[in-house]
Image (cartoon, rainbow, N blue to C red; front, side):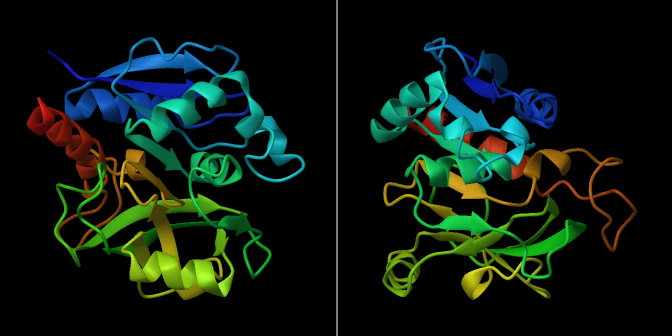
Length: 234
């Protein structure tokens, strides 16, 4: 049976179609979900995509985190459903308290768009199982409010318990504490990161590599990881 992965569209989502394409490219069935619904349509996993939900008013992701469907997302996540938040989706998960910490304006005050080198710090989450621990990957990054923050005790706990999923390498593009690019919850089924794996799934369209221009496909492993986990669970 083909795995069904829901991709939620919020007012202002930009990368929902890209995320759905990545799901399909990985071999699963994307299911379009609407923020105003209370139904997850029986999906096996969820993706909260990037964009500028509600125009980033109040705080990025703060209004979207109160959308009707988020009560279902929170319930499903707490029951163990895999949930991936990408960029604005990461901000929503933080605002919904499914992930610890928060995201603030980039320390240099400007929007940034670049191919970003990351290190996989935790290869045992629902969305990172097809990576190797310590693997270096390149994923496109585009954000204006991507600086990860948390109080010292929270950061210490996230680091100590392996909940830092990804770390920026080479350059810290937004002032994130400890170069943190993405985190998971304690259970490992919920992951959020600022870079966009859905933009690095197919040769000819991904980041530049040493082998060829637009040849990077590191993002595909996010989506194949959750499919592999589901197959093992069955």
